[in-house]
Amino acid sequence: MNRTELIDTIRKKKSFLCVGLDSDITRIPSFLKNQPNPQFRFNKEIIHHTVDVAIAYKLNTAFYEAEGIDGWSSLEKTVAEIPDSIFKIADAKRGDIGNTSKQYAKAFFEKMSFDAITVSPYMGVDSVKPFIEFEDKWIIILGVTSNKGSYDFQFQPLTSGIKLYEQVLTTAAKWGTNSNVMFVVGATHPAVFHKIRRMIPDHFLLVPGVGAQGGDLEAIIKGGKIKDEGLVINSSRSIIFAGDGADFGEKAGVQAHAIHDQMAKYFSSE
Image (cartoon, rainbow, N blue to C red; front, side, top):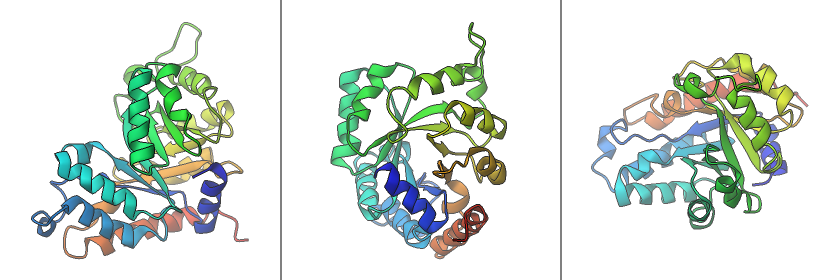
């Protein structure tokens, strides 16, 4: 999916909502667990009830890899279930030497039809370049993460006086363009959005941390929205685990629509 298509999807749905399919096998409804591909069956129901307001789905690959070949099968089936009109993110946080990154890129962009993958910039440009070489695919670079440990390194000042995350953003933005590079900026750090927008005014931001982690949706949109929209806002647990009974999909849909309704206020009525 290219930048124009992503922007069109956001505007058509009046939504920034990315549903995180962090489908922890221990938390899905018990009646699914004895069925074949329980994670896929769970995801299929979530997708069915949220697809009309979601502009993206983010699959945290760890929850599938942990289940071995069955989990990998559920991952592949889930990606195939998501319509091509919706942005598909592999939340894999890969980052390794170039020839290894090339194999990761082939796995997620060729073997499975993901539009984007999250990557760690720690090993530098040669570890990221293989992902950028795929046409109409995106890398989503870890910039400011939503976890408490983000303060251990990301906010530490360098000898130049700027913080480490600022160096990451300004350097990594040059590795590609605003049509193939996004950045992770956690919703739990609302104060940094205005500053980040001065540094990278045109790049899309993937924003985790809205929902169970307590991110302020209004502050994120006001600080991060640009003329080309520029936001993909993720909510995972508060949506997909809204219910644990037979109606879990319907309850997920209710929660997703409630978040969408809050987002829709920030779009023109035209």
